[in-house]
Amino acid sequence: MSKRIERLRGLMRREKLDGFVVVNLPNIRYLCGYTGSNGLMLVTRHDCWFYTDFRYQEQIRTEVKDCRKRVLGRDLASHPPPEWGKSFRHLGVEENHVTLGRFRQFRRQFPKAKLVPTRDLVLALRRTKEPAEVTQIADAQRVTDRVFGNMLKLVEPGVRERDLALEIESKFRQHGEVAFDSIVASGPNAAKPHAGFSDRKLKQGDAVTFDIGCRIHGYCSDMTRTVFVGKAPPVLRKVYEIVHEAQRRALAVIKPGVATRKVDAAARDYITAQGYGKCFGHGLGHGVGIEVHEMPGLAATSKDTLAVGDVVTVEPGIYLPGIGGVRIEDMVHVTKTGHANLTRTPKRLIEL
Figure 1 (tube, rainbow, N blue to C red):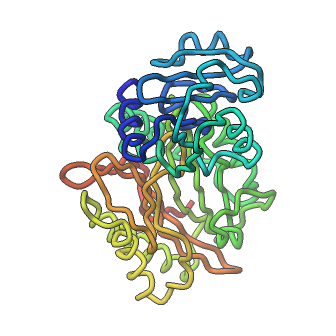
Figure 2 (cartoon, one colour):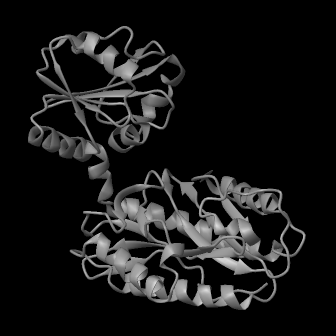
């Protein structure tokens, strides 16, 4: 943890900050190990404090590392501790995570400091995964692969999307947590990229898209597969083959130094050439870690470049309103020589 805080101090020096307030809980977890629901950190160039309330005073004894610890009231900024009276000149705050009310509160508590809104300072550190983090992500993906394989036995006409989603999430909770709300979308619902799940019952010929992930030891997995109830309709069989090939082309170019927009283009250009460009309206992928959506982004507008230590998804899709859709998603780790695919679930067309 101390190395992560030191890396943050390096970014603070670059931004000319002599203090930085961290309120985003995933960022706090990354920096000091805290997993509770109320916490705040103050990092200076030579010190670090962590604050929480009475409910977590026992929890922080074992969880929080490399910080001085203080227990305050539930509103952590209401009664500032003595160190907040220091003469900070430039104090960074997380602009994407601080409400206007909290910003005004900080302005009162740090009257001599210029508050400097910063974006993604800690998230930039979280982007490069340490070997232990990659192992934890891979562990989460192994659970996801296993749960998905077992769940396929339940896919048949008459089963509700909701029942399949609850079965998946129940199994995830036996090992850890659910990383995000599961998507189980069948028939016309599969044409909605973020459909969630409903009471719709599966029908013969449906495409069923599963977008699922768990969190093990604090790190997420993310996988999408589309299967068919019985024989796949010809139009969706064709779409499946296109999406599968688009993903293969994108995976083939993943290595350090490649612009993420070029990875997106490898899949998008192929889908467009096959006549389905307007049916693929989202980015190709995103980083994964403590949260299921992290840096970098893989999209046509992205300015990121792949680097060793990135863990990203590759998830092209085609969505046909009123008919259904297909999405295939893997998670890959960018290595010195290229990449390693962390997803083991087969991608062949499955008809159940």
